[in-house]
Length: 400
Ligand SMILES: Cc1ncc(COP(=O)(O)O)c(C=O)c1O
Figure (cartoon, rainbow, N blue to C red):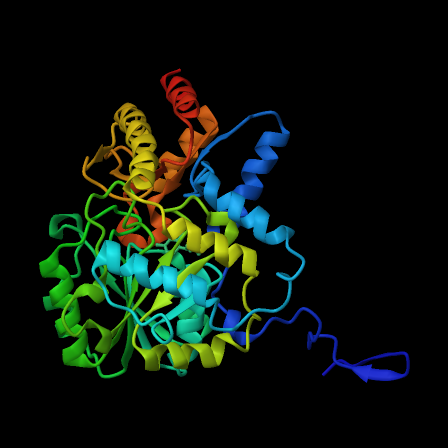
């Protein structure tokens, strides 16, 4: 083997110590949007002024009371120290009341709630807490890409379960039962579903819980969209005996326009919270207290807050329907969440082709459905996080 000597030290130049990333990152690429945003940035620098209908980052502000609470609390001299690893009792109490009021779920604020720095980090914490090398994790296809990458980083073998339009994007339980489930440790579910916008039904939730109980699989229900364009927010924890097998992630990002604040929550049985805290308390040192107090304020908002947010999205959605009609794409009008999911016309092989053509011809970015798994290959996803003016401009550009 070739050896080199530098500064009197002999080394093998093909063995890369600096910058040689860990094996656990094999097959893990930079997040799709992180690279796509760089491309859009380049296009903007070249004067293209791209309209980005990709990401679901709410463009509206939180309620003024929430911002006021943050500012007032941040101005106090004694609010700047490290915080409790389990989150402020004020926030945990507010989360407990919110779950009771909107989801009819009883949660003990002292033991069944863990505030998070965004629900995305909770996905990683759960994987790191429960997965051993070689355990199997079930993830939805199409689904939020982070389930797969977090599970893989933690050492899992990922097995996707396909959601199909003709089955209302629900898991196919007969197909699931045919799998060898012996080593399945975790299953991610997410309704209202991203990217398809599918709402849950009682029957489907009952089936999921009974499947998990039968096979002793820990269910992770990711629930950030239940208040967006949905009259009936549902929690998987509201079902009889659910706490035995369910942990639920929830988020302030979409429902309260606080995506950049990074605040979410994890709810479940006391034992699960303690297990996950064993990992999480070694990762971070709590959240800025004024932010937690402002988040608690957000949870006190009444129905009129959710109505006002949804009134805006409902109007925008009509424009997105118009845009999709122009692209000859078909969609269900009853989707929940921050996006519209649409099947592309037959002349395109896949959503990447349609997305590239709209980006190059019209300087409008829409997300190819394939980034959510191959079951999304012939779909695109359009975000509602753009003003009506921007959507009108996007429509105009596509028409031309
Ligand atoms: C399905 C799903 N889960 C989780 C998240 C992460 O949300 P948060 O901002 O709470 O980390 C997103 C964000 O886009 C999402 O779409």
